[in-house]
Image (cartoon, rainbow, N blue to C red; front, side, top):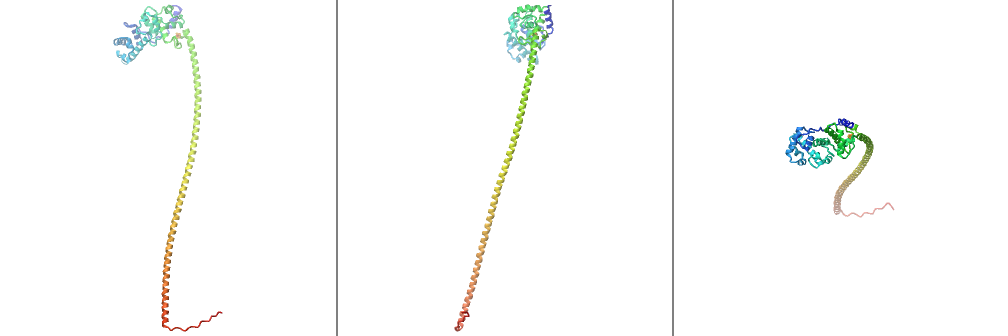
Length: 372
Ligand code: SF4
């Protein structure tokens, strides 16, 4: 075993498969072997066989199955609650095969290296480890070599990258000597799919980073990037905190201004209300005074009227009294005049009678006056 081969053997010892590669099942096509391996990530070997048998009976071809609804697919095998999960996994597997191979057969793994290269470019569900195992089943005597495997070995510094699979194989085969080809290809496939992405390798998660020249460099850059991002996050956080502080202060100022404005408005309202109340009171007082004045005038008029009526009544009574007194006086006077007249008449009568009865009297001498 060469030094590089020994080094590689130690590196592969660090790799654990996320999904162990199951033993092939007899009587299945390569496509079905792949499906069985994917199903065995969640189900037992027996359940996986049961699913494949159910699907074989239920569907005329795989494409019909690929475009079916998982709920419909699940009816063809009896796995209870797990049936839908198995159906979804089956449809996803067939879709990935179809998407990257434009067909539903993996027979190109046997004799079409360029189709293999296109197929293994990106297989999120199936993964390179399983593809390498299927390639090993397709061509048992050949070491599976794919661009992903070449990329990992190149980044590890064990070969020089080449686009020619033939040249790559001749560089890789000496490295794999003394190792189980399946073990070799599935572990490297695991690294290629899980961490060693062609464009953006996740070296910080990769188990080989401490021994990988390229990985160390990427990891260092990643760390620097993380530090820069952390610094940026800290800056952003500080900026946000400053902004938040400013915003809080602004809000606080605005709240204080609003409170002041509200207080001023309330005070103004109170003043207005007070002024209005005073005005209303003044109006009410003026109205009351007016009403009182009216009432007073009305009372005075009533009093004056009553007084006038009283005076009129008294004048009437006085006039009536005067009239009555005048009438009584006139009556008395008339009575007295009548009495006087009667007396005079009686006197005249008596005089006349006396005159008749007496001789006529001598003429009396005129009296001498004492004054001269
Ligand atoms: S450390 Fe990085 S470059 Fe090296 S094998 Fe792992 S993922 Fe690939």
